[in-house]
Length: 269
Image (cartoon, rainbow, N blue to C red; front, side, top):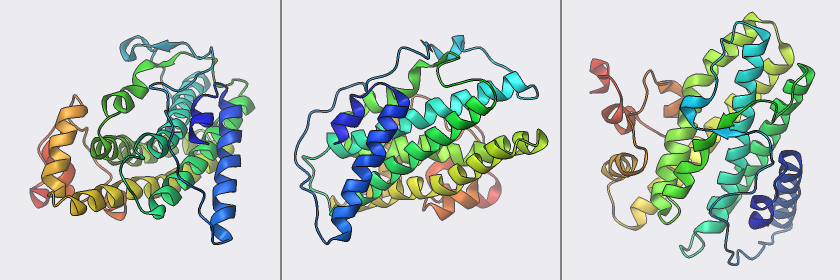
């Protein structure tokens, strides 16, 4: 099921399959059954539609969000992030089956993939309501780099994707919400508020299973997290941080401030 999602190119078709397979999983769980986890060979890169054109981050045009065109560009970037998140969550399900995990691990990531599929479609609906669509603009080619870099490192994947990249979403989404509040774009506001609420859970799943694996292997989670982020993330973490939501997701300040691009406030040292 995971590989079928990963090898489907069109975003709407990919997310429809994601919803379908998540519903199948949870229907079985509701009956007291567990679908066999099995083995699969996920592609190193997921299938993608012909558009958007994928560019180096420095070549993606920057637009100010004060204009309708700028807000469309911002939403297009969010849609691209959400589509990558769908694939990231199905990929972690398929890629690391050599490591025995409790069924709750699969519950969490199937739920996350299902929610990311909803997020992609919500943002696509907003784009279409604004006279645009996903694929109308160029997008960031580096979104999948973290997945490729951690393709053989389960702990590294958990550290970098949910605990760094998705946690970054918790930092920046409140600012996006303010932009669309100012523009009085209610459909987008509703979508962003749903995404913001549910992304906390995705970060929390990453922290939970990272700590589970560290505990099982008798590793110190904080020092392991620091080492993995320095190995795979290739830059400092950007402050300021949404400390309230990060704490809600189970990531304390002493995990991320030592990796930040500025000194922490005195209480976090």
